[in-house]
Amino acid sequence: MSAPIKKVWIEAGCISCQVCQDLVPAVFLVEDGNDCVVLADAGKRFGELAEDIEQAARDCPVEVIKIEHEGDAG
Image (cartoon, rainbow, N blue to C red; front, side):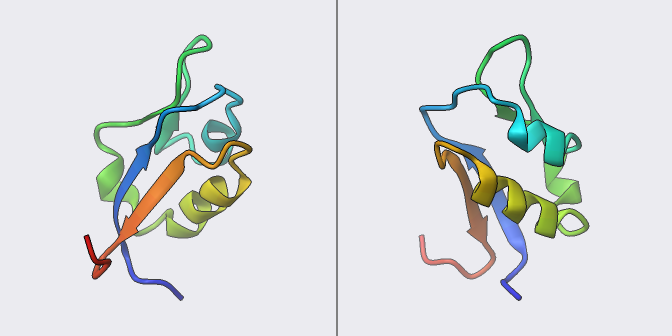
C-alpha cells in the first residue's frame, strides 16, 4: 500500500475523455469539453478515495493525472 495522497493535479494534455470523472466524481470534474480539474475541496476526500484516485491515474489515456504522496521527495 502506498503512502497517503498529499496532492493531485492535472498536467497539460488532457483530452477531456471524462474517465477520471466517471471513476471519482468527488475529485475530478470535466465541464463541457474543457480540461479536467481537481475540485477545490477534493483534498478532504483523498484518504477515503485513494484507491479510486490511483485507478483514475492509471486509466488516464494520456497519463496527465499526477499524484504526490506523503513523504515523496519534492
